[in-house]
Length: 213
Image 1 (cartoon, rainbow, N blue to C red):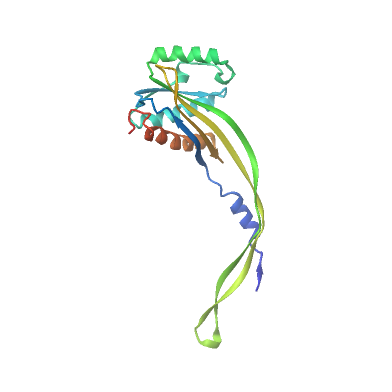
Image 2 (image 1 turned 90 degrees about the vertical axis):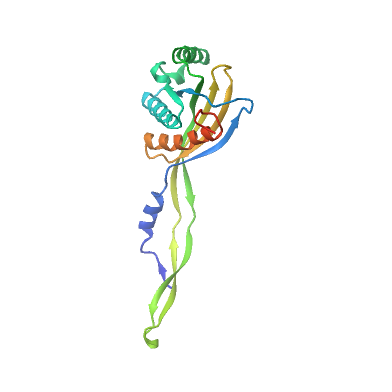
């Protein structure tokens, strides 16, 4: 058997760069006593980064609006660095915004953790079948099995953990809460789009939106 190592470098490049953005829901909890089906949702992203805040709020609002539920962005009513505010100040500003826009629910997103870690994939040895023409038997084509060795490699994984909570403005209670993990966002926009593409359908499926079940 032959040991083929010629494409090791190329394989490392391909495998190291093939990660795609994914979002997984780690946990979901809802208040079964809540009637849900909220008609107007104010979206509030807790962040001191204005670009992050606007991107998250606008993406979530657009996705929720697509279900037939009316939305408003908290950034249109509340300015400042929300992540740096104490809870009482934040609640006061949110209450003022709700009074101004008439939302019956508030969807709040909060960053829990954003970290990068290295994941190691050990070496692999595979048997690859290669067709071989056997002239002794006319046009007979046989199979030769060669050993292909793939080296171990490291892949950097960015993991973004977010908590998303839906509050009923009439009672102030959290009626739906989820924790999610988004892996390897290519960009802010890519990560947020992937996140909203998972979060909003689940909100709808759980009957929290007026356009839901």
